[in-house]
Length: 363
Image 1 (tube, rainbow, N blue to C red):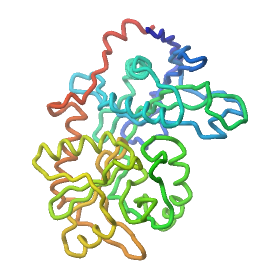
Image 2 (cartoon, rainbow, N blue to C red; image 1 turned 120 degrees about the vertical axis):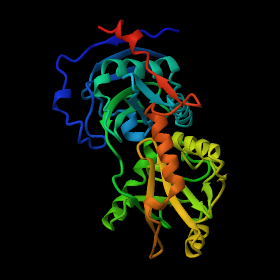
Image 3 (tube, rainbow, N blue to C red; image 1 turned 30 degrees about the vertical axis):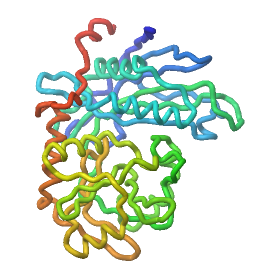
Image 4 (tube, one colour; image 1 turned 180 degrees about the vertical axis):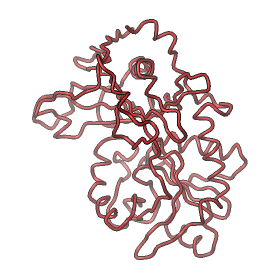
């Protein structure tokens, strides 16, 4: 089925007001956004419109019952100035996996990728080119039923906007390992990128930030022992030269696109990678024996971010200086080079936006 996308261009671009040499994360937005609506079993009214507020009903079901999901994707420009997107197909697949768990409709690939194609064609000048910067792409979907009643909605809105961003973390991350609050349980929504997962973390996050920490490293909900993920990242540890990351088998951890990419690159480099349960006790024992070589997180926003220290039950455990972490630094540099089009893309991870096709069609 072909979905016609109506284009309404902004009458006045805001790009001249942006200092691209000093980009915060997530507070500057490009000129346009994409919207599509789902009702009576079909997607319709696909359109690109000037970025702006969305008018909603006070009884909107997403506001009351939390049927909302989202994704995060990044775009850059290659040496020829063509917009390139890192593994959007994986985000598309995960978006619909989240939708299934939240009783939401599947978004057709034609709409998902069509939104990215159109926005990056129209707003391609918003893609920053300075080091450690990119255009962050935020697809999201929410229930648009106008009724107060606990039931799966039948109306939905899918939207995509973009935001030029710099680094998410500007220093090694200080992590608080929480042994009181829990992020996810087996059978829950931990693997889905849904709004509720993040909402439940806000109060604990506020508490640890007052103590000077950046993020929470969550432990499992049953034993309160096994590493899960950090609020913005999947977690990796390197013990005695072996790279270890928690397994996805229980469905409590987000299927990270960057996580998958780092595992692939590490194995290609010849490192041993283990996807398995790992307890906080094992990590601390390795630290005390001088075998904890590294800890880092991976995510679309965070890329690969080093952990500087972690706190657990009254003790602070410091990690080696970042400049001495040969493995993670090498993997980070390789990933960044591939994402920016500066290194050979052996895995077909880069999607090249067909700007020439759409530029001729967009008024």
